[in-house]
Amino acid sequence: MTDASQAFDPVRIGVVSVSDRASSGTYADQGIPALQDWLGRALRNPITWEPRLIPDDEATISATLRELVDDARCDLVLTTGGTGPAPRDVTPEATLAVATKVMPGFGEQMRRISLAFVPTAILSRQVAVIRGRALIVNLPGQPKSIAETLEGLPNGTPPVPGIFAAVPYCIDLIGGPYIETDEAVCKAFRPKSALRPPR
Ligand SMILES: Nc1ncnc2c1ncn2[C@@H]1O[C@H](COP(=O)(O)OP(=O)(O)OP(=O)(O)O)[C@@H](O)[C@H]1O
Ligand SMILES: Nc1nc2c(c(=O)[nH]1)N[C@H]1C(S)=C(S)[C@@H](COP(=O)(O)O)O[C@H]1N2
Image (tube, rainbow, N blue to C red; front, side, top):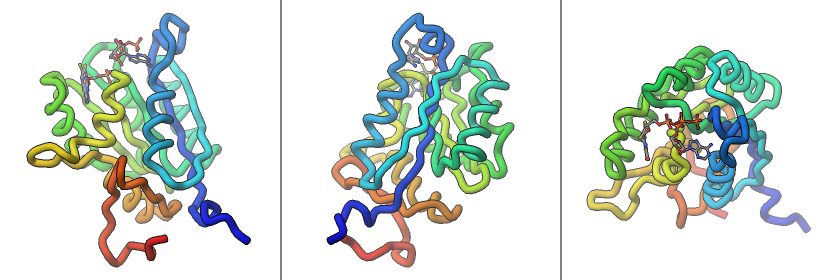
């Protein structure tokens, strides 16, 4: 008999922490664990992780993103850190440099969500792009901002959808695996025509 969990498409996810201090050991990295914690709770698919802890260096960030998509064959890559205005904050530039398409809605929605948490939300220049058959999304560096932006405020008045709600359908549209979420953590949205029958 086949285990039902085997029926979920496997998904490969790059989790990239961009931090001078965490990558040099000045403090322990909380970015990769926070990304894995949230995604591990939200997704029902079996996940293969591709973690990378790197400094705020534009060439290194672009090379890491290319390697994760072109060689490691990630379906989704999430970065955290380096999106602000400081001279060393270059994650958006490095991400745009590897883009085949820019997806402005993700950054717009993240800044909207984050304004509910901090007035400095508008300082994050985060972007999302498509490269080949992968979606790459920048998140801010504060470890708590990872759950905030991915999950939004589903119980707020009015509710504010987190950006992850749009990720599964985006990945369908670029030919990736069918991502299924635990609705208690994140209710993904797909048009009816794109839905597979519920399990
Ligand atoms: N990977 C990380 N692990 C733990 N805390 C982090 C991490 N990245 C950022 N932070 C925390 O969030 C704050 C804002 O993040 P930001 O990306 O602006 O870092 P930063 O000030 O440029 O420094 P660095 O790149 O050396 O982490 C940091 O000052 C730090 O307190
Ligand atoms: N949800 C959320 N968004 C946030 C924050 C936060 O704490 N929570 N911090 C803001 C701050 S203070 C900055 S400077 C920018 C850029 O952060 P980064 O350079 O760490 O990527 O993200 C902003 N967006």
